[in-house]
Image 1 (cartoon, helix red, strand yellow):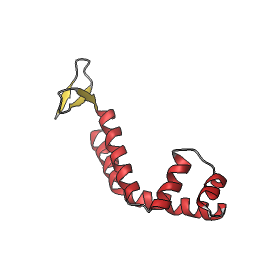
Image 2 (cartoon, one colour):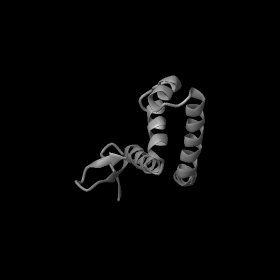
Image 3 (cartoon, rainbow, N blue to C red):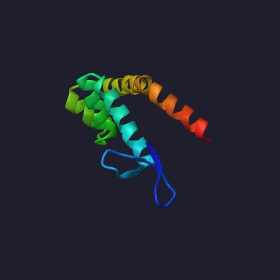
Image 4 (cartoon, rainbow, N blue to C red):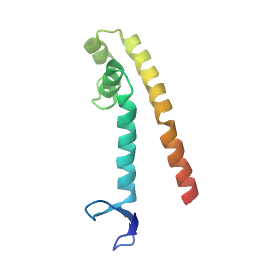
Length: 103
């Protein structure tokens, strides 16, 4: 359900009646989509991807941790990014289409 806040900001009502700005709701939805896509990855692939982009570890640190060569980690990251793009394409294509309609 969409509503306008006292300041004229567009938002949505949540279960407890609080008004959330649409950008907050969008961030929550994006987070849910990313978490669902990550769940589709194998444990090692997910661990390397999170290690690199969430924890900020270097390729050489990940190689040591996972017992792989740096080149193998780079290849794994490349495949993981491509898989995430495929898994999330439906969401971001739909999000972009919605933005275009609302312009």
